[in-house]
Length: 449
Image (tube, rainbow, N blue to C red; front, side, top):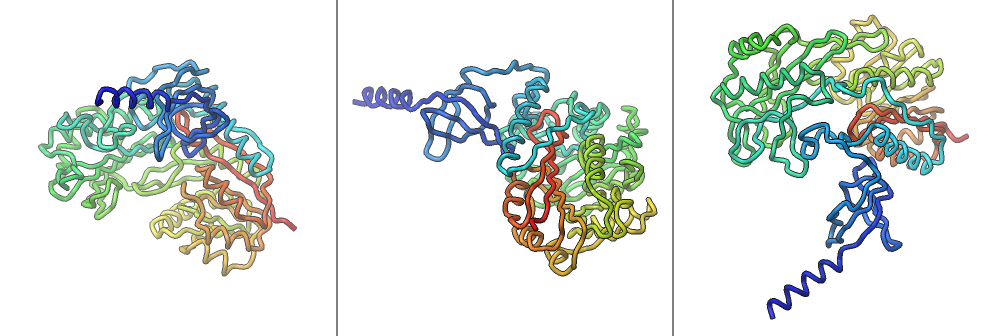
């Protein structure tokens, strides 16, 4: 009876397996599988691939990729496990085609002109910021400093020749890991809230070719600065280091929560250059992760902004866009809710002697509701997009044109669909993040008269 039941179960599982073709990969990482005139959603396959899959109660499990139109190259030994790259195995033309196809679909959804996907000049070694985690690759294994493994959050994958970062960034990471190994302290364990070393954040200035480090630990130990400096000297890396911060974080979550932050070596900020402006970058500053690509994206924004009397720069961060457009308007209000970003903005505007950009500490919704009218609104929100109340406030404003810059096309499209007092004129993509699924887009909206 038991043998028969097991046979029936195996037969049922085989009967449940379906074959389909992947027709779409969305920027939210979901794929669409078409099979037997039905549509299924899953993940971890590419458009054009034929897959075998099984429908579970709440999900669709891909069992096997039966065939693929892509020639896949193994050019990184950890690319199948590291969470840093999605498209590392593909030739760039295939990666470009997948992203371009999805942007065309979104443009059709918005009924607007598609201006194409721009490829920046920097597609390798481009990341100017990396956030690494201390941990182990297997339970009880040796100390690692790297990125979380795909699908196994508690495993840390370390590789010292990453193609996304400048070469010295990997060297610095290796040196800090060796320093931590010799310190006598363990890495932080979330389950029992014990251990010392948590994260290492490295930032790089292309303009100065210098690095800023932020070592994040708990408060249970002491960071030996003398040993740290000696190790960086020994590995001939100290001349590349502009400053080192130490952050205390005793929160249980894996996010970097700043209980206390202190500059323990060198200078407080890196200096980066975009166009002809200089931008101080501290340990907590927001800045685009691909400097060259950011410069090219912002030049496009400059091209499409007409001369104006008043311009609102919403979700302004440290007022980078406001500064770069300072010669395009008589008055620019850079609105930001984070006080630290406002302080960064004031420092940057003073450094560049810019007088017509005013940082405003406010909720963007409240600012739009109480102000009269601008010639342009520029929004550059985080990946989560605009809050519905901000969407509503902008939609009911008296502003004729909106430029929406976004690192998340899915939330951007969702936002602008809700702005029924505006029409979307066009969408342009910027492939600023090679080997990942992420892109930047710029949307131009016009008030419906």
